[in-house]
Length: 203
Image (cartoon, rainbow, N blue to C red):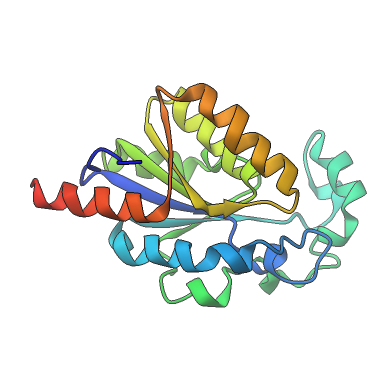
């Protein structure tokens, strides 16, 4: 599928490509190994237009708010009382692209739960957001829905997202996200890179 050229105000957001999901934890997402090359391709193409969202853990279940307390009472192993803080870091293959200036923290599924991220979008007049990362059916899709509601053009890199529950991944990619076809494009990484290159030529 050919994607219309991407404007210079396009932002690539890498969702939760962190050690807590890539390594042997209760949140292990094996598909990360398979999508890393495509995430890297997007980072290389949109290097100065890429941010990394990081899902941060509370110190304990009691330190979480509202229903997140119940959530972390179930996932006690994923609190900082148990899990080393460095497990929240971006995975090694992406570290050459990530730095203090393009990483942001969130304690919610959606990237829009970060006030810093929302302010960044406005400050840089972003009009299009390309999403990659994990998990398709949770943090990626929550971010997609918020981006659509906020009026952004949204692109999902079909071969650069994944989930620990691949049935849920496929349901999101084949049934849920396509319902928003007027607002969301679902295309391979190569199409996104080409659309970005085309957008640069039109400047």
